[in-house]
Length: 293
Ligand code: SAM
Image 1 (cartoon, helix red, strand yellow):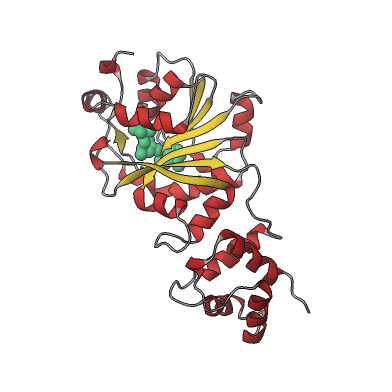
Image 2: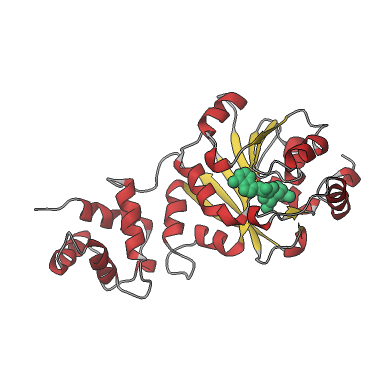
């Protein structure tokens, strides 16, 4: 491909902004990528090839979509901003393997759309430069919907990426780390400077690569209850486990019962939530889920 014609360059992006009199909407997280080399690295980390089916969220003017069209078999992209639909029809006209859906990703029935757009044998991956204002709701929707997708590679705010991939006993470790790592193996694969975007965002960015697990890494009796206990344990970070658990279970357990159950689980109540592994959180929630009385 002739590099000059790539969408992700400052000159082409400016040209399109002028042609369509397009003004960025901060409320939709519109920071477009203007660096093809960064896009190629994202494609590399996503591990896509000519057989992969790709789903993109928020194609913007098509910077990443174009690279996905060039390096994968088929692209389905969801864009919420009506003003960008004619722009995408123009910029991506040469790519017959791209399908644009004008819809809010949070409203989309992804299971149904995947059935319509891809074959059951196809390896499907999500690749996106996400709108930062709804990163977590989008990712949690993708994970909880149990989609037939093998990986998710997303550009997000650097700090959020660090929290999602964090290990115990680190500053970034919290309930979001457990929520994401229950469903995936998470790795931050690269940092991206602000200068790669137009307009430049206020925050630093990073690319997070999530490999979806075939089954959860721990056994929990009730997933909803497990996540509530995890949240309770991180409720007040400086407080001990037993104090956070007491706050959460105030109406169901006395302090003594909480101590007993912690003992039953073999977990010291004076520890802090940030020191517990996923296995320990599972043990804890299963112990509290089964009242012995
Ligand atoms: N992919 C383009 C790029 O890399 O240059 C644009 C990325 S920009 C960070 C985020 C895009 O997501 C914007 O085009 C925005 O309009 C779109 N968007 C915002 N909220 C959305 C939603 N709920 N559903 C689908 N697209 C959304």
